[in-house]
Image 1 (cartoon, rainbow, N blue to C red):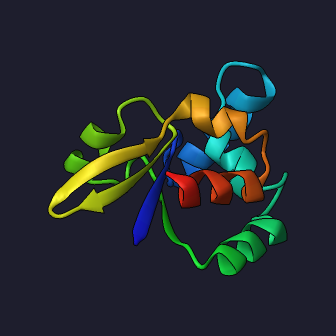
Image 2: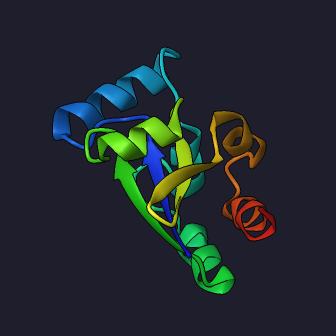
Length: 113
């Protein structure tokens, strides 16, 4: 099963800078970023958790996702999966926030849903 995680941020350089500024001034947040990234780069614990759970998650920024993916996701950030030809929501902002930045908690959520 392949999952797609969609960040609540744009992938361009300007988008990344805007996100960092919004996060550190309290005007924006992405719970998926908290799970996958530390301050400056991807968490090693993220890669390890994906490998141990044998789960493939493609990570996209909102400006990289398709219209169908964004429609399925609703509020961002989100994790979605394809079911036949239809994208379905697996975890939204509340479920991702409940992971409290812990990649292993997200893997548990994905393997039990």
